[in-house]
Image (cartoon, rainbow, N blue to C red):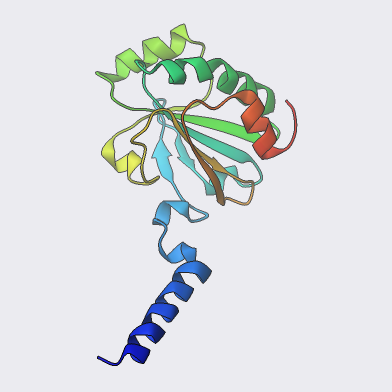
Length: 163
């Protein structure tokens, strides 16, 4: 095979990868990215949150950093949900919906909670580390995937502004 042709193909391939990263991203990263139903039966879509920052947080009841970030997520959600910010929690690795409801009640979790079934998780990509948070800007674009503990201060820096 002609080496010049191989180099040209390589250059074109790399150019496409650099200039068009959207081709490699799962469809969940599109503006209408997710369609999920919370434990109260309400449907949440990314398009439905247009104009707000949205933090989708994957967590588990047994995960210490998940438990540590809950108060900050509740505080931010409660103070800003009617203005410019919302949290959606996705519970993974649970025994039953009743377990998640009890846990949410005990921890005063006021934001919508979704059971993390495979169909839900597939819409976001990987959540193999807990906690994992997906942050979408008010235009519906994924701007950050944060693995590990996320704090109120970190979120405020990312979205620009204090609660």
